[in-house]
Length: 250
Image 1 (cartoon, rainbow, N blue to C red):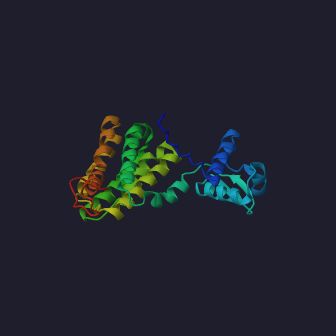
Image 2: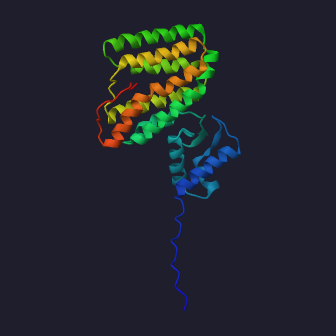
Image 3: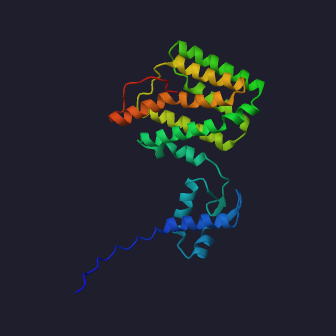
C-alpha cells in the first residue's frame, strides 16, 4: 500500500482591492497615460472591471495614497504626475522603530553621493562655491559654540547637488534628512565632535574648488561615519540611547 500524500495548502488568492490596484496600474502603463489624463469615472471603472463600485473606490484610494491617482468632483479619476511627495510624507510611518531601515537609507545616500559628486564638480559655479563657503562659516560658528547645525548640513547638501537639476535627487536628499531626524528619536545622535564635522565639510568644498573628484569621493564615507557608528552601537546593545563614539553624527 502506497504512502498517503499530504495535501498541500491552497495558495490564498490576492485580495480583490489588491488585484484591482494591479489592474489599474497595468492599464496606466499599457496605455501610456500621463499626469492629468482621465482614467475613468468610478462607476465606469466598476462596470468595465465587473466589480462593485465600493471595491473600485477602495483600490483608487490606495493608489491615491501612493500619489498615482487623484479623484476630482468625487467621481472622475485622473492620473497624477509622478512625484516622491507621497513617499516623503509617509516615510516617518514607514520607518517605524526600525534602525535597520534608517541605516540602509543612509548607506544608499552615501553610495549615491559618491557616484554623482564628480558630475556636481563639473557643473558647479563660482557663485555656488561662495554660497557653500557661507554655509561652512555658519557651521564653524555653531560648532565653536557646541550647537547643532543639522539644518546647515541639509542646506549644504541641497546646494552642492542642485547644479544637477535633478528633482528626484533633491527629494532623495530630503529622505536622508528625514531618516536622520527619525534616528534622533530612536538613539542619542548628539555630535561628539562638531568641529570635525565642520572640517569634513570644509574638505569637501576644497576638493570641489580644486576639481579633485577623487578626493571629493573619499569624503562622504567619512562624514557619515559618525551616525553609522551610533546606529551600529544601538543595534548591538539593543539600547535606544547608546553612548556616543568617535566621529560626527551629522
